[in-house]
Amino acid sequence: MNKTEFYQRLAEILDAEAVQAETVLKDMDGWDSLAVLSVLALADSKYGVTIKADEIRAVQTAADLAGLIETKKK
Image (cartoon, rainbow, N blue to C red; front, side, top):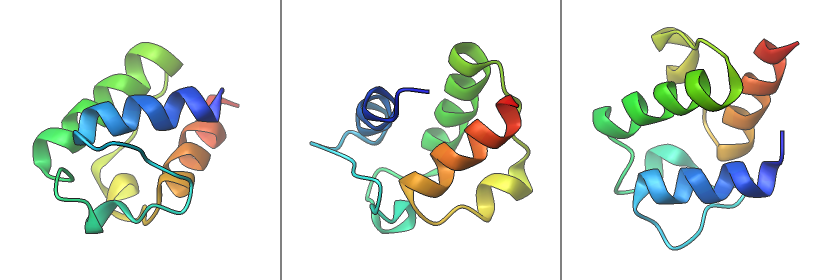
């Protein structure tokens, strides 16, 4: 996974200027149910990964989210 590209896509979903690894997702104005659905769709279509709701609720930062996707890809 290209993390820079992932963070750019995440920034687009959140309608944010930029997302860094340490960005706390719950602190972002755009982190809502629609954003979560968009992330789930991105994980499925781009990375071939299915993420469950309880897994995404446990995610704190953008790096955590990227790590979750990478772990499921293996």
